[in-house]
Image 1 (cartoon, rainbow, N blue to C red):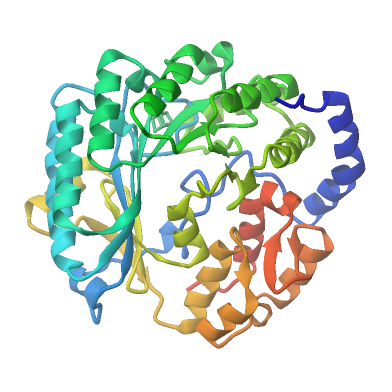
Image 2 (image 1 turned 30 degrees about the horizontal axis):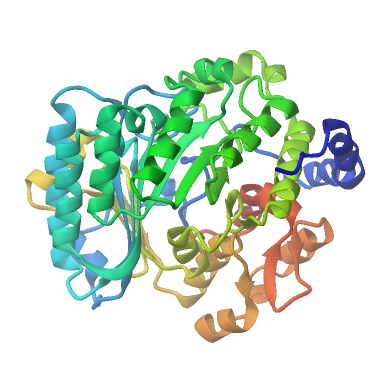
Length: 454
Ligand code: SF4
C-alpha cells in the first residue's frame, strides 16, 4: 500500500489551502458544526422534524398509485450505547427485541398492502444494530420483508452490524443466513481501531473483532462491505486517524464512510457533556480539515470516489440507496420506531417512543407521528436541491423535472458558495468541491437558513 503523506505535509497543505477560507467561512456563518443543530446525525429531512403537523394515514396515500421505493427497516437494539449515538436505541434485553420484531412485522404488512404495485429497488436494515438479533429473529425479519414486497431483481440489500456480533461463532452463522436471504451488502461500525478511544466512547468491541468480522463476511460470500469510521472523536490525532484508515484498507473493503463527529445536547447528552467539559481533547476545525483532506487525497490514490460526501467507494460498489434517495429525490419508506419517510410528496416521521409506535400498530394504523406535505413543485425542487447537492445536480435534468433552474431558487447563495470554494458551478452539473464535501451539512444548513420554510 502506498505510504500516506506525513502529517507535516498535510498540516502545511491545510494552512495553504484552507486556513484562510475556513476563517472566512466562519465569518459568513458557515462553521463546522461539532454541536449539531439537527435532530439526526446529519440533515435528512425537509422540512425539519419540528415543523411536522399531525397527519391522517389516508392523506399520505391520496392519489398514490405505485413507484420505485427505497426501504429502510430500523431495529433499534444494541449491545451497548455509544456516547455519540444520536439515534433512538435501546439496550438489548431478553424479550424486548422479540416484541419489537412483532410490531415491525405488523408495520411491514400494513405498508406492503398500501404500496401494492410498487417495486422495492433498495433495502437497508439499520438501527441500532440488527445483528444483535438472534439468527432466528433475523431470519424471520428478512423473510417478512421478502415475502411482503415486490423486490427488484438484483436490488441492493444492506444489513448493518457491529464487529462483536459478527465475529463470534453465532456471528458466522448470522452472516451465512444473511447471504442466504439475498443480503448483498454489509455495513458495520468500527469508528476507530484505537482501543482507548473505543472505550472512551463506550464501544465494547476490539479492533481484532472488527478485522475478524470483515474476514468472516467475505468468507460467507458478502464482498460488498462498508466500514464506518468517525474522524474527530475525543482523543483523535492525525496519526491515529491515518492508522485507522490504513487498517480499514488492509481489510480490502470496497466502501468506507467517514461521518464527521458531532454531538447534540439532547440526542447525545454524554458526548455533549464530555465536549463541553473539555473541547480541547477533540480535534479543532483545522485539525479536522487536515484529517479529512488527507482522507480525500489518500483515497483518490487508492481509486476510491467520494459520492455522496463522507461515502467513499471503489470498483463499482457505489452505495445505491444513498444515491437514489438524495441524488434522485427518490421515495423512501422508513419502517420502525423513529424512522422517517419521503413518499407521495409527504415528508413524514414515525413515533419515536416504543409505546406510541406499538399502540398505533396495535390499533391497525401506521405509526405515523406527523408529517409535512409538499404539494408545490417549487417546494419539491427545494428539497431536491438541498439533498441532491450531496451527489450533484444536473441543471438540464433539474429544469426538465421542475421547470426551474437551480439558480432561480438559490441565486445569491450559490454565488457565495462558489466564491468561497464550496460549490463548483463551472460544469453542467452543480457539485460540491472537496472542501464543500467536508462541510456538506454546513452547506445544506446555509441554504436552509436562507429559505422561507413551508
Ligand atoms: S452501535 Fe450504532 S446504533 Fe448502537 S449505540 Fe452505537 S452508534 Fe448507536
